[in-house]
Length: 533
Image (cartoon, rainbow, N blue to C red; front, top):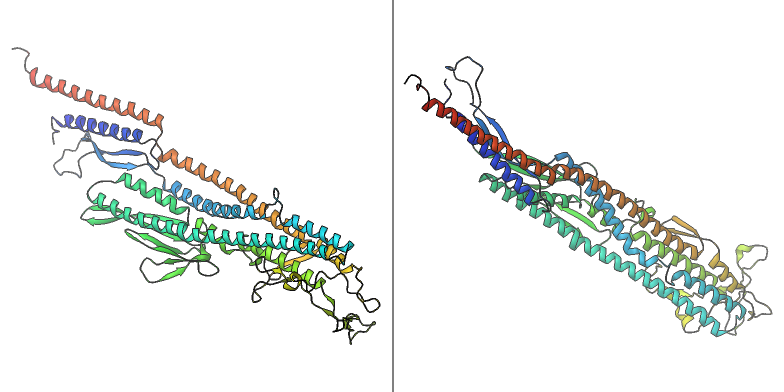
């Protein structure tokens, strides 16, 4: 089969068209060098040749192709780097949410600059010391009561601030985090539909794909996801890209979030404790509780801050609950010790001490010589609830003067000596000696009340420092992964400049090819057979 005389012109024309289109693509890349989320594009080309063989073709092997064919415009992306980046974003989301939650607790327990609970405990020691020197002085008893009230006010304030932090985090989780995830899922599903419709009309919709990739990266910061691309035939020989997104839980199970244009949604239940997160199935068959199977992401980090209490519930993170329970344990131990120490000798109607009928000097288990009665310095605000930083007050009988701080439980000459102060000294000693502080049978500290609060403060400071260090490391890893991803997908000005020169030269060469072919054809037409005329 003889090759067409004008086939060479077609080859040159296709080469010029391809070079011009490649310059257009390069210009598009340069124009969007500062566009956030833009992925570098390239012109896809292939050698153009005859398809299949011909029975009548000659047997020689000198057949030449017919030029270049533009097959489309694609994006330069590395699926592995995309997957790695989204995995790191999910881990970063966990640490970031945890660190943000702990930082909200810092002003509550940080007393490095302000007078607070530790200072109040020192003032109580000072007031009790003054009372011990003047055990019958009502004004000194009032001083002790005032300092105790100051301590309770600080405890109430801390408890209220802890409740406010919890309420803010919980409300933010429902109205911000979960709402944002649902919005992202809906937007990705809508983009899937728009991209599909564009591709049916032979438009690659690369800018829409950039927008979708940005949303996928954002979604990955909230929870671990897996993205799968597949081709769907929508007509004879017509294929479009279909994207499916699944959530992979900590057990390794996959839950489909997006399939083509369909999407599922999350729902937070903040009415009780713990706060739970449910995922509505894509097929509408129901919902599943995913609270405990979130492997990483902002949703997990925020739920950890809200629900987990560290050693107190056997979890791996000290959330708000740990510090609430620690402060409540400090309060419970404090009021229990002081209420027990403030027992007084029981008097009859004549004001005489009542002897203990079971008293036996040889058997300490029979109790003291005189009966003792409870004179609690503290009461619960709500008797049905346990002791806590928010559920404690000065006892009414201490406030109205029915009794005060008991100075002694000894009886001398049938009377309680007014100048004795052994009970007060026991109270002073109790402020400095060691006590065991525990929650649900789990001991978290042993020492004085002052040191216990300092331990809570130091624990929070340590947790914040550890979270910040981990956050810094993970940001570094994410940045490294992002740089690797940008090296493939991002626009590099130097590289695009080289492309401009390269494609310009190829365009010039193709034009020169056409000129050369034109000269050869001119020789063939106008000069052949001229000799001898």
